[in-house]
Amino acid sequence: MEIDPLIFRLSIFILSIFIGYYVVWSVTPSLHTPLMSVTNAISSVIIVGAIIAGLSGNSDSVFNSSSIFGFLAISLAAINIFGGFLVTQRMLAMYKKKKKDKK
Amino acid sequence: MISANLSAISYLVSGVLFILALRGLSSPETSRQGNLFGILGMIIAVTVTFLLIGNFSTGFIYVLIFILVGGSIGAFIAYKIPMTAMPELVAGFHSLVGLAAVFVAISAFLNPEAFNLGVPGNIKLGSLIEMSIGAAVGAITFSGSVIAFLKLQGLMSGSPITFKGQHPLNAIILISIVLLIYLLCSTQSSNLFWILLGVSFLIGFLLIIPIGGADMPVVISMLNSYSGWAAAGIGFTLENSALIITGALVGSSGAILSYIMCKGMNRSFFNVILGGWGATDEVKGSSTKEQRPVKSGNADDAAFLMKNASSVIIVPGYGMAVAQAQHALREMVDTLKKNDIKVSYAIHPVAGRMPGHMNVLLAEANVPYDEVFELEEINNDFANADVAFVIGANDVTNPVAKTDPQSPIFGMPVLDVEKCKSVLFVKRSLSPGYAGIDNDLFYKENTLMLFADAKKMTEDITKNL
Image (cartoon, rainbow over all chains, first blue to last red; front, side):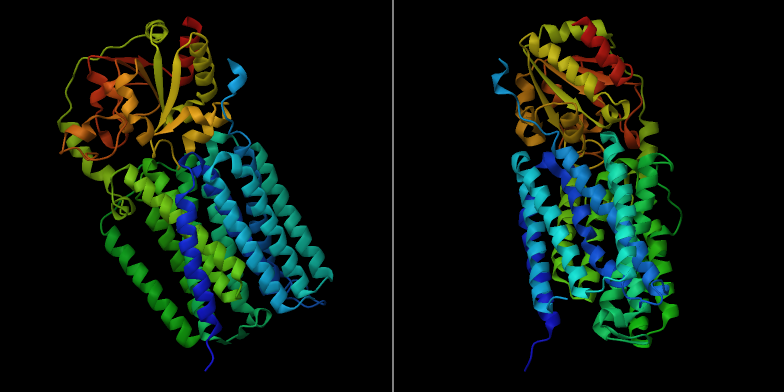
């Protein structure tokens, strides 16, 4: 008897929820805004699906009804990836510790 | 072209890198490295996808062009956006994730061969279920985030929009979504697929309009969670572990943030979602209103009080963001510190319009993060502090939450500002905060109201110090 591959994906999914649960609880509250922007950026890994969809057309017709949605999704996800990571980087660069040598 | 196994392992690696990216956020020191892990994970995922398809013809060029176009728009926004506008930005980004999920699902539905899911009209049942769930959640995320964005941006009134029969209507729509998914999977009809999308867009819109502006921290966190579940749904369809891992991470992250925000308001998740507050409290607010004496002062009085203090606690709120007063505030604190006055900041979990909003604004104004404290860390210090400087916060300081069981905010954790020797309360007018709850703090013996724009008042105080 063979196990359906779906079960393995489901295992990954469930275990990842638990990992997410513990990892996110350990995030310091002062970084909750960067947490949201970075989760935004990483959830745009959906771009891999968009790329597959975009490249689904053949060489004669790059654009067909299916691949156009792929290309649209690619640009939306790209906005998010670049925007999300960069704005997170910009925010995190602002968090500074007190300068001890000041006094 | 690389083997399917190698690509699966690479996706797993990028999933792990995403976990490390979130893990890095446990402290500001490790967070920047964490972000780099995230970027690396993304690069691996995208590169592997290209190698896996192995199609470097014209289509590939177009993909790069679209990435470049989207990327430059994203980068431009990221550099231009003012920190006070972060809640709007995040809501906007959520809507894009949702829409991208919808588009990928549409594409997979129209051309399942490209994804190895079968042929049109005969898509594998499991894939079709996953696809339609991903598309429905994505559509809800999209329209919900658009409404949240419009409310935060002020393009739409922040007050809750309610009408008769709202909840039954929403319930009917939600049930019909489940029904549609079931019918879609049994008939494979493309008409049903489009109807499902339309209905999902509609419910996302209807779910968010009854929620008031001050509940936005919960809404944004919730939509964050939805965008994760949408990504996970698509991940199952594409059999892609990076997407499944990320979806689960983001989904639970958003859920935890929603929980923290609800706890910060002492309300249940459903109470927020059903748009409770605004409507029920109006009656009470107007009937019990009475004129009570208030002490008001000017910048000179405030400066005098602070100059003679030895410790000051600052309580920022959404009003500080609106007035863009964070830089002026930091300058005031610098002056105080020169006079050897100890200054710290107290932040309530739901201060601002999204989780951690105040912390980012203070960080932007160069306030060191080890001077900024959360509610539990600092609440006992108010009794020993000389002056509490409340700037743009209101409900989160209201002592009524501890004393009056009749009050709608009773039981909500609040900052014990009234225990300070004196309280300076910067506010534009005496009008009660959101939902018409009068703040008892205004009428306390030791409270001095400073009626002015937060930024202007702070600057004036600095001049008088």
